Length: 265
Ligand SMILES: [Zn+2]
Image 1 (cartoon, protein in one colour):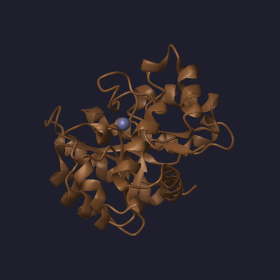
Image 2 (cartoon, rainbow, N blue to C red):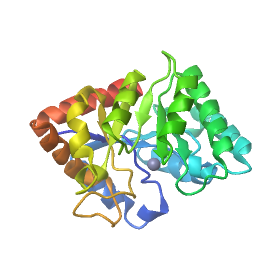
Image 3 (cartoon, helix red, strand yellow):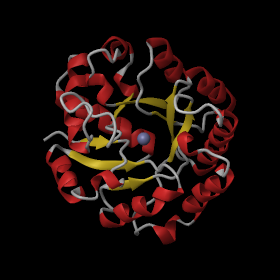
């Protein structure tokens, strides 16, 4: 059976409190063996950690402050991000470690009033990621120009990461590839009729692609608009394999290798 990694999912969220065990079992039946968990803000940290304690071999934790959670108190929140990294030995089960800094980035869709703070939070967390030798997981919505400006400031040989839930143009994909050490996270949007990724992906070499669901958000067709879950990664993978016109076994092998590379596993 093909093996997959859901490189971005929020399955510690309350949306799964009623059936988390069953949902995880269904995902495993679909071949999803690893679940990468970006944090959102300090309100979610206990939930995230308790899932990692329950499923330490499958669930891989990250630390980070989501741009939509950047408010007046963002410096305190950033402190929590660093604390989790520093205290991981006592807060995580043995054998587990923090595998990434995320999710971080810019979101100007919902609220533009904290742009300056979002920028500062992104720079600070990117610098920590370099110091810690971890990839950054980037969330960007309605802010490609602004994030590219920041990337030009912080990018270096040491910085690697994923532009998660990539839905941009071919030019934006090329820009990301040009940063070196960055990959595109492809999720449910690839199955949307007017998602546009079917035109962009053929120009992106497969070595730059990892797969994700972003559960519980952005479910692929035919579940669009419903709760997303990691088992649907299979649907996303099939669509990506079709676009690249390749056997799904090969896609599994390549995306698993890409995932190992970016998360240094
Ligand atoms: Zn996310």
